[in-house]
Length: 397
Ligand code: FEO
Image 1 (cartoon, rainbow, N blue to C red):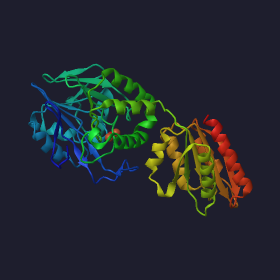
Image 2 (image 1 turned 90 degrees about the vertical axis):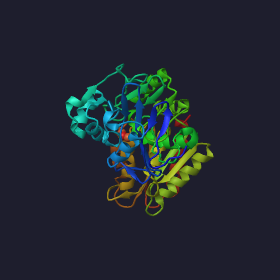
Image 3 (image 1 turned 180 degrees about the vertical axis):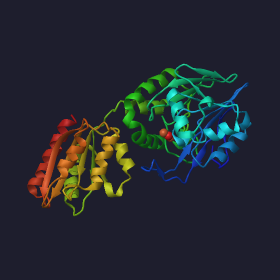
Image 4 (image 1 turned 90 degrees about the horizontal axis):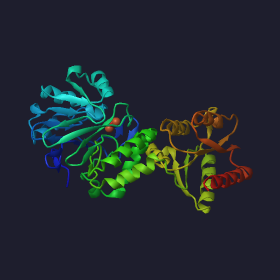
């Protein structure tokens, strides 16, 4: 089923996708590049007695949401605005809907109420607080609420539509996709997995423990459909749940990520020698030039790669800033990386190893090797790189 700008789709009887596909958005959170845009999926559930909208939309799309809801219901008669997550890409239009629907209540967690007041200026007397096991009967459509905090903000929750077996988990299981297709099976499972993994790396990876707990609850529900608030909808939830099981478990592959930046070729040469030595050992290697790579791709590799090698020159008594940024990202995303190594070179003052050690020293990552060449790498430096390849092979046994 293809997307049209004003199109809505029915995902179950009287349950409609009324979201927005934002094809032109290039950046999220000022950090994450969106090669395929994104969508802000909102859902309308029409019961025999009452009507609810689940999540809303990003700033600037209020009228689009209004027009889409109005194709199926009178927006002024909406009874509930379910706020699974307070981040503005999903909650910004909640206030708009509440101002149109004077009798509607915003439904969220206790923490969500705090954020609704502080971030969105919603009056406290328009907020209904729910917790694990709370439910709302719309008339033949029962919305059950599930505690799922810290995915990836503290207030997050899931909503489950019992009669239709549809889980609305907001960001969880999401992906930044604004293609025409609505469902993962239409978009393709491999394509979906690729973008869902990228999304997981950047948004959910730091919250693996909370994600694992939430996943157990989802498995117990055994939903027929998972309808996240970004990207495609899962009519075959098993494949995305299985992928999340691996990712939240930090299931590692026999793989090495080499992230390099090179000014005059020394770091690249050492990276290339290591790459070749590891491949000869039958080890999968992903190698990225940090100056020409979307940092999201690096993050995606971190989901299941136990060994990270940073190759970068010394600049101004520290590591090249692009490599420092990559190391900071590894730390910020709480990557499950187990081992790291540093390949660097300097001519007069060192400092790259010290700086990278300081950044990674506050993580659980063990630094298993350092090669710091004076100037262009000589034979003894490249021999040390080969020793590092042996060390990595042993760690991957
Ligand atoms: Fe898609 Fe955390 O907002």
